[in-house]
Amino acid sequence: MPKSIHLFLFLLVTCSLLVCLYYSEIEENVSRRFGPHLLGSNLRNLRASEDVSVLTGAFLNVTPSASVQHGEVEYQNNTSFVYSYHSANTKHANFSMTETIHLAVIFCNVGQKAALKWNFKKMTRSLFKHCSNNIALHFHLVTDPSSWEIAKEIIHHESKKTKINIQASAYFVDTFAQQFITTIEVLQQYFSAKPGTYYNQALFYASVRLPDLIPSNVAQLIFVDVDTEFRDSVEKLNQQFEYFDDQQLLGLAPELSPVYRHILYVYRNQHKTSLLGEPKGKGFPGYNSGVVLMKLDKMRQSTLYQSLLTNSSLGNFTEKYSFKGHLGDQDFYTLVALEYPHLFYTLPCNWNRQLCQWWKSKGYDDIFDLFYECKGFISLYHGNCNSQIPDANT
Image (cartoon, rainbow, N blue to C red):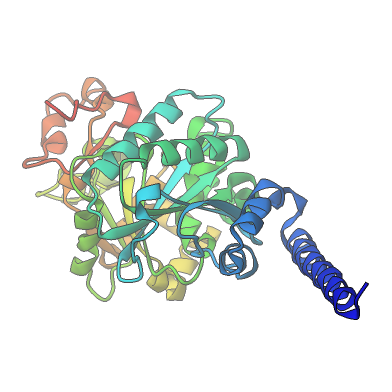
């Protein structure tokens, strides 16, 4: 056999071995850093595509905003799972100039409460329906492993007809509870009726720690309850950040029921001229946490905000206002607003049109409508206390 053929075969075998060693090293590094469950079909598909840049971007440069141009990729860093999905008709689009809107949702215990799946589906469907194609959406889901799988399926299905660039990150609630156990126990002490009740669960206090949970490169965030539906574009809601002044950290809409008039009964009885617990337009009815706009960068930098999460601060405020809450994070925001109103931007009620009328038949029927009224076009409905949201076509 001619020497040239021997040389050719030698080079061919050598190159094949080097390629195998190359992919073996990548696989070993990925497995060591992220765990063996991340390999398999995703890695094989990337190999088949011969797109090393996609592999590097999706697995090795671990940033919560990393993404691929098409398909689905999942990976894990120290705090979250990150899942990227781009519908097929976006793969040639240029997203570098689009604005990313970050949206946080609590989506837990779906196996125990099937209605949550339907709520999340309606919320995402309404969100995508009213979005323009000039934005990118990044979901930040406080969830659990089984609910996370359902959320990915819904996002994938509901986004098929859109050209929006979509990503989702998962923050498992059990890990959150362990990481912020001190804060949760303090909040549970003041804002839960008693241990074991609905609002005693850790997930109802997640929003107050989102500045520490969400990656530091995210400067602002919109938090929405899963039982909400959009009737206008999330871009317009995001534009509300432009109205914040330099001191405001959070934006919430007024509570549309007399629940805080009830909670502040003792304080109001001792302060006859107080406007706390009065309807919007006349006084301060409290805030509803179904929609929360967060200036995460300012919240992280605010020593005042961090101090408000301590037992001493909340103990002093609850005593001052004779405040015993039972609605989780919503009570926290309302109590803080009683003492530090300058930290809050009041979002128009149209962006959180609550539909719950539970308090109307609890001794407040004569004044309930003063709280409940919300005039004008409704941009977002909130079906709190299992209220029926009006059909989008009515």
